[in-house]
Image (cartoon, rainbow, N blue to C red; front, side):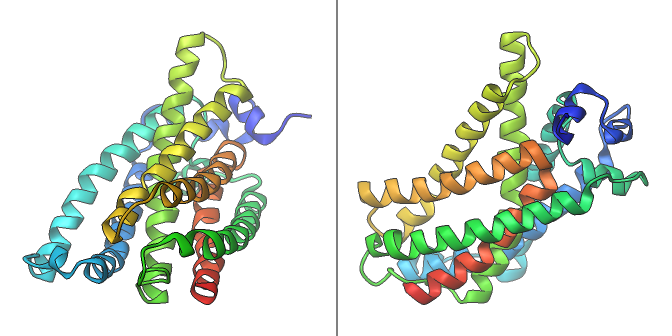
Length: 272
């Protein structure tokens, strides 16, 4: 019996018919606006972290209205291109945000509840495990004075759930994973195998972990043990989200990423 994702790739999934003949611009617009919301949501947390680590980093910043405008314009360009390119490549693979496509184009969405349920459950479970790992192993490696959370809980939750759950999934899963799978498919001339998907998921997961290092480095000395721990923890999360993107769709990965931040931030705040 074929899994839903395998049926989709073979073109006989019930949702295969919802793919428009051209790029689904409605989906691209919704994803771009979601990324914009995430970029604005994480801005207070990033400024708080910068001010805590080195107050001079926030000196000379433009007024809030101008800062929000610049952030919004930059996000619209960057994430608009990422969402459009990611959708184009995912469409070639008969993959991607199929639930959004169904909802926005007025088609049935088979297995929607099951996909979202799996994403929510796996995200919460991952957040609990990695919250303990980060609180007990990563936080003690942080520079003195920064071993605990430096931003209020609401900032960490808002930024993590919206930016992480939407923007990072568009960049790392929809764009990077889809692009790598498509590249490997062209190089091999065959339909993507599980090995190809896992290779792309692993590369995107490691990249996901490495991209967290500049934020940590801005807070203090980035020692090799700290860099390794930050990369490992976030790459582990990336593997989970990548697997969900492959088997349950982009929406499940987004929901899992957002949900993981709830126990993650709560636990880190308690054990740090």
